Length: 307
Image 1 (cartoon, rainbow, N blue to C red):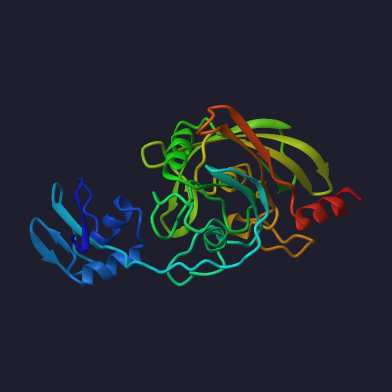
Image 2 (image 1 turned 60 degrees about the horizontal axis):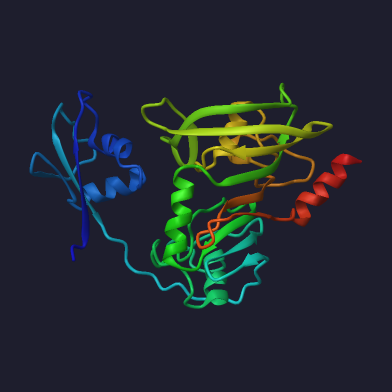
């Protein structure tokens, strides 16, 4: 088996530096990493190796990029308590705590939800997403709490993944936003993609370069300086709710990444909870729905605001 995955691109009519061009067309790596690949000799233009990031492309240049395959990592089961809402032979629904990363990554291989699930489920997990993400069919951010589906076999994984693909899964979130929304209910309909200046963030872009993100919202309660809002996702993009609220100039409380001001609770990390998830059961084909209780921090903030 090859140690590299090869990607081929054709330059457009912009005379871009090759590192800039590649960072725009290959979204799975940072510009810094692409510059490293260039220095390593992993990029060729019209069949000739290029080793300078400043190399200028011409229209219709043929670029070949070779990306090294990731080295297999050993992910160990860890006896971390799980808040399990439901479990059967096909899947389990867990209430992920705020602050827990869903799946391991290089340099961060322990303390994740996957480590905990490996201990709980032993070998009964789907393998479609590989060694780093066994059972993981979707994810929520580290600082978002709430309901998450873990698939225990490949049949369930494919079935639920297909439902996610056609946006037929019910996903309802609760969040606290800064300030007061102009309308008590509405829809944010935007296109988003990785921020070109910071790959850890998402940014609004045009239809040609982004993914469609549709979020329906409804204000449930209002307090001094904040609104409690229910969000219903029509699509499921990375940071979708967080970017949508920034777009409305009312970022989520604690969401420093997307411009939230300092809050009275000293929080760093958005106040957002995946409350409800519903879908067709892969084996029975009956609709099932589950609700994750709010975490203690969220409950405490609501109690203080209500007073």
